[in-house]
Image 1 (cartoon, rainbow, N blue to C red):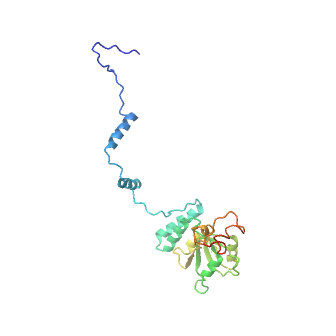
Image 2: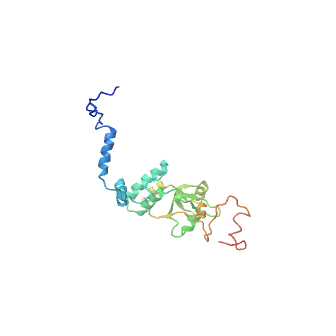
Image 3: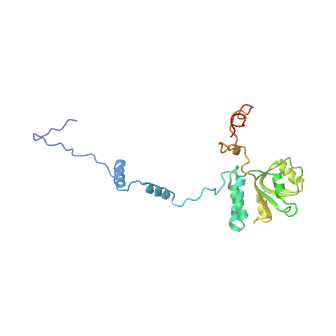
Length: 235
C-alpha cells in the first residue's frame, strides 16, 4: 500500500478507520480490571490475614478426623452404626468408639491377651465385656486364658482360638452394639501407642539414650566411642 499524498501544508495523516478494542475483547477487560484494582488499598499483612479468613468463609476448627481415611466398607458400616448410636444415645462410650474408629492404624495399637487378662479382676469384672478398637493378639508367654468375652475389630487366629477354647467369646463391634448399645458392663482397653520400633529412634540427641539409625549392627558400630565411658566419652 502506498503512502497517501500529503498537501503542501504538511498536515498530519489521520486514519479514517482507526482500530479500536471492542468492550468484550480480553485486552479491554484486562484494562478495566487494572483500573478498578488501582483504587484498592495495598496488601498489608492485616489485609492479607483477613483475606485468608475470608477464603474459608468460616472459622476453621481443629484438624481432628471426622471420618476414617480407609476405604474399607466394613469399617464404614461400623462408623455408620456408631455415628447413629453416638447421636441417639447419651452414653459417652459410643462417642469414644466412634472417635477411635477414625484413628489411623498407628494410633490403634494391638492388645495382647496378657494385657486383657492383667486388666480384668476375676471376681468383679469376669462378666464384663472387654472392648478393643483394634487387633487382639496372642501372647505365648501366657499359659492359661480365663473365660472372657472380647469385642474387637479383628483377632489373630491363635488369639481367637485360645479365647474360644477357654469358653469365652470373640465378637465383633456390631455384635457388641446389639448387646450393649450404651456400653454398659464393658471394659474399654487399648494398647501402648509408643511401643513401636520406630518410636525408639525419635528425639535423637545427647543424653537421650535413643536408638541410632545404623546400617550395620556389628561389634564395631555404634558401640564404643560415645556409648561407653572407657572409650572416650558416654552420652
